[in-house]
Image (cartoon, rainbow, N blue to C red):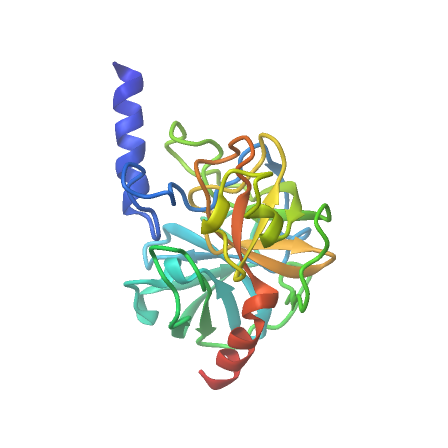
Amino acid sequence: MHGLVALLACLAVGSAWAGTVSVARSPFAREGRIVGGEDTTIQAHPYQVSLQTKRGSHFCGGSLVNKNTVVTAAHCLQGRTASKVYVRLGSTLYNEGGLVVSVRELAYNEKYSSSTMEFDVGILKLAEDVEETEDIRYIELAKETPATGTPAIVTGWGSKCYFWCMTLPKVLQAVTVYIVDWQLCASDEYKYGEIIYDTMVCAYEKKKDACQGDSGGPLVAENKLVGIVSWGYGCASNLLPGVYASVPALRDWIVENAESL
């Protein structure tokens, strides 16, 4: 009985987070969290940021790409206004330390579809410029998707298990996964089929994945931002890779809007 209550409570909490949809109605049953990962530090991933409410609640991840631009997922920004979003940078802990900066403006791709999860990219323009330090660094946008099998790291403060974890880890988590290009991810080798599109990239490792609360966060390979945590069936499920918005595919939109906002 207690297990059932915990499950229902977890589903209720999950459905209130940005981008989460009812698992009964939609294939997009989770946002990105870290499953099978380990504690890490912000010094190892200084581009990682936490998107927060005014009260300091973490709701999504993001990546600092220049002195005043954070890249995240479109579904993290739907229904939100810039004045009510804050960004914590330079801290291993999502709930303390580092630097908290307000947001001047936000935007997400006009082609974003919550039904297909295509074009799941957005940006935040910070209200003040942030200089690089040991704990805060900009990350370069990838121009090409690395070859399938290339190791990549996904980081975040999201839930550490699917369904049962009721609280977020305070310490930044990291996990190594392996790039799967969108065409292979859409093939019979995996279980997604035709719902994978060319604006996506996948990454896979058995029993390791991103999950709820990691959405919008970075997938990094070869020291470049390759993907943005977007969606997937469950978390760390067999032959169901994590699905990310493809930065190379969406790079032009990111650069153009980073300059115009």
